[in-house]
Length: 451
Image (cartoon, rainbow, N blue to C red; front, side):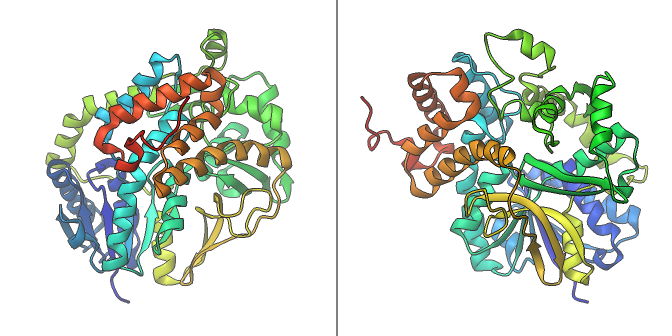
């Protein structure tokens, strides 16, 4: 069978690239693929190239490995493109997304999916992804673009609406939360059958069962047992009380973590309610802390990855990327959860929005599953997030700055904390601080009428 060319965009994200490359090369049918590593940072790219060779040696694989800072060369003739870029980086962009809202009393935890931080990340990221997709239309028009970049729903929505490139958005929250719930209730995850649907980071398990037995009563028992829900995130314990509280109120369990979910709703982060922060264990500025830890440990990690004489251990991750590539190359049918446009998939979510649903993958590509209608209260909650996603995508695609204000006005957490004048002033300050990271039409205030 022909050997696919798999391009990693943002391959300087070494740890994530390592996991995906290890997954791919673990399949004998993919072990001689061409892996093209592309990044704008030559230093980090070099580390990823070394890691790729070490992985191949550990697995006995024989891929062709190419590292380049030339995007066109990386994309030319690619069969698959795996995207993992972070536009603007930790500094200045992510720091601005946290520090400027703080001046207005608006606190965040992760700020990469929704909220004012998610909006700003989308404004600087979508234009770059669109440029890449235009390159793909010229250089590899049949490529399958696997997008891991957040904000997932906004990015994937814009790519699928504005380009001809086949794109699917991939996350690990569905399978990751299923594994967590399995641990919580003491049932092996491989014995569980589940059906999940919604939007990225706000999908819910409509079915969670083993051998025909509904396992939701066990989750209720776990909640009522009085055990404090705990899990590990990068070695640090974090309470998972927000999600269990939402489960108590909604009757269904959501896919994304408590630290994420707390900023998608207006219920948990309130500047005049520190008791809520303590009660639900909400880690304000969590993403900032994670970035600082990663930056502090990078030199040590790089030395270990580049110079260690020990075999590089390879453990299959739960990411879907390699499974999709293997299924398309071999015809092996699999079900994964992908982010796609809502064309007749979920009846009570807006047509054309970005939804996360089970998808069959084989040689015919990504084939989304029709869900029908979600429970009405779940769909209503999702629509509060979809409003923000839609207006942010519209702002980028039309260049209308006023839709940035509108997106922030409709964001559940932002609207619960700030009045309209504060929201507009915050948007103005963030757009000005981002400078050239934001496309020119959105930097201009001339077309926006204000009293």
